[in-house]
Length: 159
Image (spheres, rainbow, N blue to C red):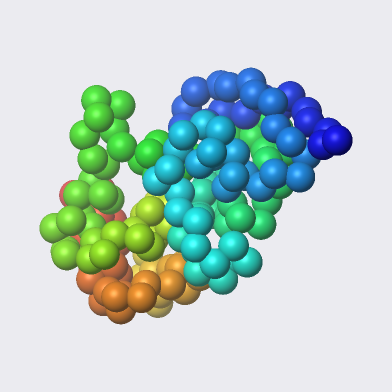
């Protein structure tokens, strides 16, 4: 018999209370229980970054975290990046404008990593962008467009 716990967390700005099995990952709960399918399941070993979310201001691989670890935490998924009126955030718009979204599978994790970087360093250098994005793999090899999108979003925020 699986043990479960009731946890509370702020998910994309909304305080939620929900029951989770103690062995379920945050990725499992986000996708299967909360219906937040923007967070992608890919390697399930923390190598690709497709499942990235921001937990208390830090980018994390949700496939490596147990859901119970976010009790009391603030979690932002790719769905939480959109503006309150349902429009895309400037960062999401920059990804579209730069052609950074190719097949789209890695893009949620890329956006999360980029947002976490911009939250921490509003004016990143190209080297800081490359370092922050290094944990997110892109099979379409759109790295140049992704870096340009992050630069454009940073410049737009600073103008």
